[in-house]
Image (cartoon, rainbow, N blue to C red; front, side, top):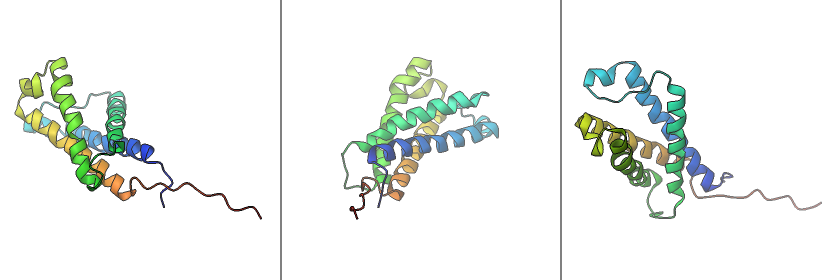
Length: 147
């Protein structure tokens, strides 16, 4: 029995998935893994606003789970499909506006691959959470009959 409305489930799943993937990016930055691999992705030194901004966008994209399309698929599969939206936004809007070029290719193919992998991971985490929460089933609490 699920007492959280699907709208909030999708919002929370997107935000929590964004927190998880942001933490992964932050750890890879702090440990120097991205520098070692030559991947030009980095969490800024003052990471709190960066985390907050990514969580907000994760929540926004999480709301696309609420759209009743392909509902016969498992949420983890839908998560991979929903993650295509933020990937397209990043490649066709954010990167060109920020000077990284279309698909981020001005900074190399590893940036593009890293972006795709982290957003697909976001979709898997969000979908897993929604599967775990039994997304879409919502039961309002009934009031007991008067005695």
